Image: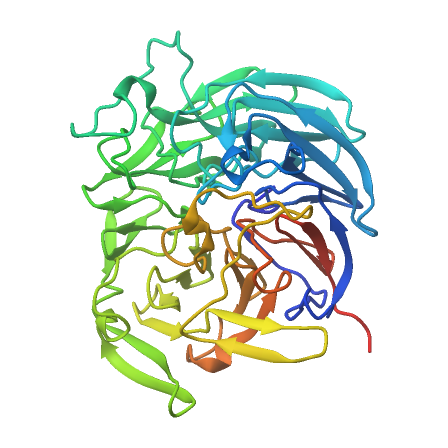
Length: 502
C-alpha cells in the first residue's frame, strides 16, 4: 500500500538500492511503460505485479478546461517488464478535474495482499478484484464536494480497509459543518465531517467509524500500541475544515474498542495537511510553527520544537559557489516572509529524525527529536539533463511543466500546476529505505538524502533525480520500493528504477 508493508512509509533491506537515476538520460532505468492518460496514485507492489490507476482517457483534442471526468481505470503491470497484464474500469458518480493540484479521482493508491487488489475512485467507488482483475465486490461512498483529498491514502490492517469518508446520509451520528461562520465556496451542508472508517476487506461491509473526526487534509497512519492496531489522525488545515476542535487523535483500530478514541490533543493552530507519524514512544505534528512531540500512549505534550526560530541553516551562495552557514538563526534568513508549515504531505519520521520540505525557500529540514536540533539545507529547484550527459542546476528558477499526458494534451486547468512543486501543493509523500529518504516534487525531481549523517550539510544530499524531460514531467505520486527496485510514475509513464551493471 502507499505507506508500505508496515504502514510507516519506511522499509529496511540488505539489498543494494538505487539512489541515483535519470529518465531523461536513461540512467538506471530498467523499463518504462507509457500510459494513455494521467493519474496521481502511487504504485502497489506484490511480487511480479504492480497496481496503479489513471483517469479514463478523453478524446484527443479535448480542451484543457474540459479535462475532467468521473471514471478511472485500474492497471495491473508486470513488475519485471512493465507489460500491461489487465485493466479494469472503475466508474463513479462524482466528476473531478484531471490533474488537480491537490487531488483528482485517481489520488488514492491501490492496496493488495497478494490475493486481492482494492482500487479507490475518490469520486465515490471502492472496487475489490482478484489478482486477475475479476470483480469480487464494489461499494459506493459519498464523495465530499470540495477536497476529495490526495491526502487520504487507504490502509489495510488485520483484514480491514481504513479510508477517510463521510458518514452515510442516514447515519444519526453524521455531523454537518461546525467551523466558524464566514464566506465559503460551498454551503455547509455540502461539507459534512469526514472520519476514518473501516470496511471488511473481504466483503466491503462497514465495521466501525472513529468518533473524533479526521480532516481530508490529513494522511492517517497505522501502527501498534499495547499490542493492538491504532490509527493516528488529525483535524485542521486550510479552508476552515469543519472537524473542530482542531488537533490530533489516536484511535483504536482493532479489538472490541475499535473506533474508540485512545486520546486527543487539541489546538486552534494545528496544521493537519501532513502525514501523521508516531513510534512506540512519541507522536508528532505541527501546531502552528511549532513541531509538537506528544506521548504516543496518552497524548500528553512532551516537547515543543520551535523549528523556525532557531536552526542551523545552510544557504547556497551563488556568487561564491558554496554553502553559507547560519547558526542558531531564524528561518527569516532564508526568506523574509514565509509560511510556518511544511510543503503539504512531505513529513516523515526516520529513527530519531523528523524530516520535511519547507514551504518556502527550497530547504530540506531535519529535526533531531532527541535533542531538538533543527537543520535546514537549501537545495536546487531543478536539475535539467539530456541524453548527451549535459546537466544544468537551477537554484532560483525552474522550467514550468504544463502537465501534458502521453498524447500531448494539457490536463491541468489550474495555472498553479506550473509552479515548482514546493509550498501550496499536495506533494507525493516521501518514503525512506534504510536511512535514505526520497522526496518527490511536482516537476519530477526526487531528492535523496541520507538522514543519518552527523551534520545535515551538502554531504546529506545524495542525489537529485528526474522522472523525465524538463518541462514535460508532472507528478504528485509517491515512489514505491520492492526487492532492490524503485517504481515511480507521472502523467505519461511508469518507470522501473534499478541500478544497472557497468
